[in-house]
Image 1 (cartoon, rainbow, N blue to C red):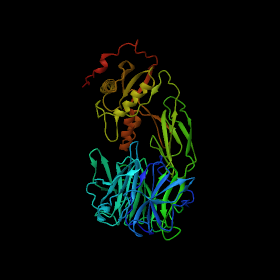
Image 2 (cartoon, helix red, strand yellow; image 1 turned 60 degrees about the vertical axis):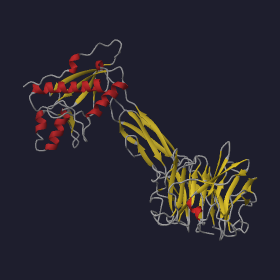
Image 3 (cartoon, helix red, strand yellow; image 1 turned 120 degrees about the vertical axis):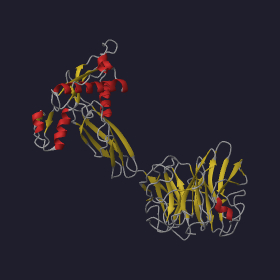
Image 4 (cartoon, helix red, strand yellow; image 1 turned 90 degrees about the vertical axis):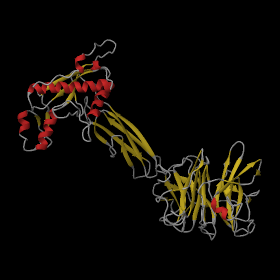
Length: 537
């Protein structure tokens, strides 16, 4: 039977953690030993002991329902080869199509999940049942209640997670993209939820069957004829992106695993995979291969520290070895280049993801020299409403973040005391500008003390009015110019640049006035710093 079985079934996934992406495989081999036969072998399920393999055999005259029936068979591993297979005992094989769906073992019992085919043939398409085995005695199967699971189509396949709380299955529903699609039901303390379609990324106009989910619940394997492949049905994998309905674009496992014929029913146990294929004949046999890990992804970095306090000439040089190109590179500061230049003091983390899914992160710290006495400290832009000391916080300017930078600086250097100096541009009366600058400095002071909880003794708010204009470097000529009122007025014809230059003068900066702060002995701060001065008329 080189196509979909009349009824296929779920697999239990108990393997070790696997990579989210696949690199390569060894050449496939037909399972050695006496497991495969002239009949058709599909749907492997490996027991938790790793020594017992259950599967479906079709087209065998010894099946209970005859040659066109599907029965559960079992084989045991002996000296690296699978022994002679025989039908499973008990009541699990009958005249209908039967399949083992999962084996779950705990200290008290073993639970065998099977197709629910013990009442009528129609019942097969409505779900699964569980049989409890104690002391090798297999009990009667009891149907598992999955609400709203009412399947009319002929073909259905199931997967159950090791924790027995995730059920993935395929059937042709009213909202299917084409033929059989993948659906999911999850179990909570209140029972199983109603089935949900898993989305059109992994479901195609063709059929999707034989789902298999890895133990970490992030990689799904399935067979499909609706995506570009090697033959009739190929095995693909997809990576979960968040919700159960969100998956990456399916990736074909490649020519070693997929043949020009039918390939499906993959299970993965550590590095080993087992699947069903009719690549060498009319009927399917069970094959195995091992996944090959990609070259280990390694990143190394060398940092060049900033040359002066508050400088911005730090660098990070990165080398990447191993892995599979292309690489996706992201830095904690948002950059995507391999190396970084023009850095300030700080910690920078690079994350590299290669084409096989390996993900490696590395932290590199850039330092700077210690500060000097009387050193002017550049602050990020703190801006205020016109003729006011009320902060601007909008989509373009975030004065609160800039003041958080000041608080972080004081935290990083717990011994320094700073003057917090506010300046204005030259527009308006000098006396008014002087008061305005003092109030702006005190507004910063109050925010740092009351909101960001900075010790008030470590900040001295100072207003300089319009007396100390900033220095501007012309980006075109590289020339440095003091932004006097006369110079800025020469740009009145360019309203944008005129306003930018005035804004450079309306700055807040700091100056280190001490580096011996001791919270036990340092004197109290002035209470006047919490008061604003009335603006002169």
